[in-house]
Image (cartoon, rainbow, N blue to C red):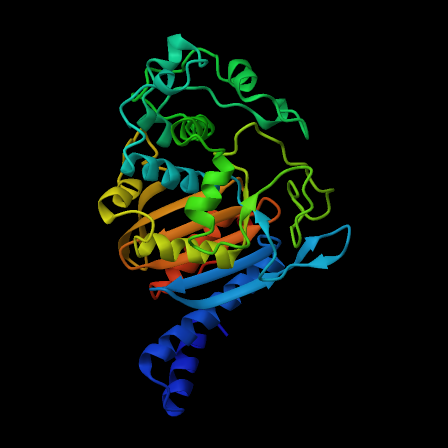
Length: 360
């Protein structure tokens, strides 16, 4: 039975049962999402957890597959996954909170706060450039980083962030780890360890009990193993950083839903400050706000503003902002998260899903 036939069948059935139209629409969409998600899992495009919500109400959530192949542990809704670069939006929030507190100036230079940073480059980079990947600092590949051995912060910056700039700050876009530099600045202005401040200002107020910083020495309960391309491979190590502003968090779909509700309801910042996160700051082929990609995408013939971010190739936070529709996918191997989340969002807007199995 095809998607449109399923929708028609469910519509008639629910009408005869006397279920209200709004509930009927949600149930129909949830059923179609489940059909699509299950098909994606069967094609090897998903292995993890999925949460879909609309205007603060979870309409679909599911765990699929294996969290740890070696130990034969199945995924569950409370399985914790590395969320990699989705971490950047948390750092952006903490940075804006420092701005709102009057401790951080977006137009100050990096060397105003970090005197040990290379002066020739750091004096040109403004703090705002770190939020939007417009700083010009070349990307640092993870395979150059030490595993299980955290370098001293100053030594790390001198080793990895002392290169010449790829372009004049503010005049280009180069995705990288400027959020680690931002984390160092946040430490300086707050006089607290970055991780401590994150817990005090964000995790604890929002009761994000399943979210934290990954460390190689930690034994994190219910943590999914990380695989590079498929569950047939051995788990891939994660790398330590001296500061964890870019990609060090783990979380669950439930905690990320709590995070999204806090953003939707302006619980941590006033709307004036928070809206900066969702406004395009730079657009050199990839519109970017502060810690978020900002895109205008089409769903079921309607153009909608979406703020989103992938975490490596294994996670995505995908939010149609104006209509408050949300898709969160957490995988433990490289999936097709962007394409899958777009198809799920298309279903939420009344469209039908298309198979993406051929793009595996």
